[in-house]
Length: 172
Image (cartoon, rainbow, N blue to C red; front, side, top):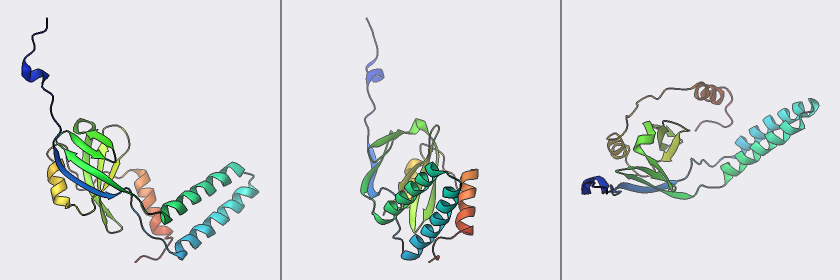
């Protein structure tokens, strides 16, 4: 016979602290110059790869270019986000506080981005939309640490260097 107290068997109910909707990803309408520059780079790379008889790489490059084209022309869908007492829910995926290590904010293309870093796995990127950064920060900081400046990996540094050295469009 199991004699457990009633408070041990009571489940914690999920309470929504903040909910909002925002685009599922960053989106910026691209102009003709952007696609012209991409096309020139891809043409040069394709010619080099054809002479090197790397046809599989040519197919991979063309696939990536098609993906870039689609992501640059098709606007993102609206998705719902929730901050609860148990974790963060975004686009139907739930992330418990115990699985998240820290968080920070970044700004790109005039949009504020919440980035959650789990203990294991890849970063979770959520657009804030019309939510106030301070309100979101206050709710999340009760559960996981906030970082002003996150650690930059070599991939982050390489991407920053590449975008500075090879701009695909004029900065606005």
